[in-house]
Amino acid sequence: MSGLFTAAFLRQIGWSADVYERSAVELIGRGAGITTHPELLEALEKSGAGTSDLGVHVEKRVTLDRAGNVIGEKHLPQILTSWDRLQRLLRATIDEAHYHLGHTFERVDQDGSGVVVHFAGGHSERADLLVGADGIRSGVRAQVAPAIQPVYSGYYIWRGAPNEADLTSRTLESIFPCFAFFLPEQQQVLGYPIAGLNNELRPGRRRYNFIWYRVGDAEKLREMCVDENGRQHDYSVPPPLIRKDLIARMREEAAAIMPPQFLDCLHNMQPFFTPIYDFSTPRLVFDRVALVGDAAASARPHMGFGMAKAGSDAQALGEGLGSHDDIDQGLAAYNEIRQPIGARIVQHGRKLGTHLGVNLETDEDRVMWRQLQDYRAMMDRIAEPGFLAAYR
Ligand SMILES: Cc1cc2nc3c(=O)[nH]c(=O)nc-3n(C[C@H](O)[C@H](O)[C@H](O)COP(=O)(O)OP(=O)(O)OC[C@H]3O[C@@H](n4cnc5c(N)ncnc54)[C@H](O)[C@@H]3O)c2cc1C
Image (cartoon, rainbow, N blue to C red; front, top):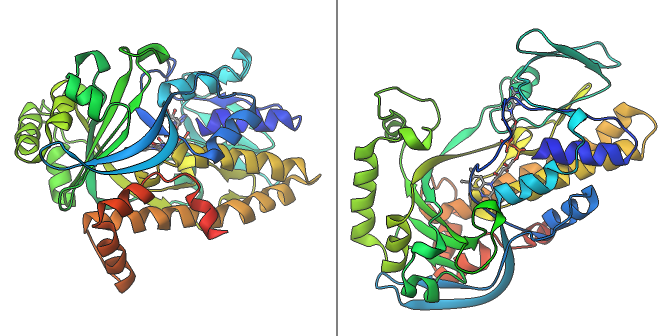
């Protein structure tokens, strides 16, 4: 997504930009819900992607107790969208001739005035600039800053997206129209409505994005990453290969603690898990290689801000290059503006992550942990629109 954003913003300043994607087929149906922020809406509008039929509007947040009663409520309008919808809006901004599926980046050579980018299979391209928009496990970053590695947070999430049509009337009435929370000790269960498949926004055809944060150390994660066929994976397991015993154990644990509405969601979805990592890079520019989006810095998802950061990084890169005749000066301007912001977002994610009580190292961590034990503070701060403004 940050690659598509970047190409759109570079085109606007008169550059010719091509996107090379490793997947051989169009990317669809990945991930699920995405909370939106003013920065994301701005980047979508300015990039030309637009915000039409972006997602489902909610008016409020609620917190449930174990019995499913609403114990807290907060008015906070927000648009909840989905990975698919954003991908389609951004994909439509690029001409077919400039979007190249089936190209896996392997290596970049630099000579001071440009780059030669080598792809698997022997293909290579010369350009003025390579933008690494290849995600948290970026191969581009691995070459220019190999010491920078994502750090495991000590927790992971179970997630999934049940269809609205499969949920009980109690679930539909009490949590479906809301951003909902259930907050047992050292856990978080969150949910919000998103579009159905093919961006269906009509009532009855939408989905509910379900997320359950669980604490688990690196050893536990390694055990979870053994798939149904006994194969060990490095970071996570493709959903169809997640072990059945793991899912059965997770369902049992949920039944022991969760309100009926969230259990209803869990019963009606195909669950998969995602370990939570984060990191930031001290530099975003390495001569004629620049990093954007998750390749540049990736925060824990408590702010739901990854897409907004991807869009704003790309926007700032376009603005830096567009306002300088010299490419290197334009890149330096981009680095100066976005590197500290990326680092700040990562720090903010760690602050919110203290709610889970893992690796609390400083007094500040412990103070934050205590504040976040109050569900009202969580409703105020999780995926809070405008949180970055407080730092300006
Ligand atoms: C659990 C979870 C919940 C989240 N919730 C939210 C949310 O609510 N709101 C939000 O805004 N963000 C959220 N995010 C973050 C968001 O998903 C990411 O920030 C966003 O996807 C970053 O986009 P990206 O384009 O930088 O990287 P990616 O989406 O990872 O895309 C990288 C692309 O590069 C391609 N690629 C990788 N390697 C190569 C290679 N060698 N050669 C060619 N191509 C390659 C990949 O195939 C992929 O298409 C969440 C993340 C997680 C883990």
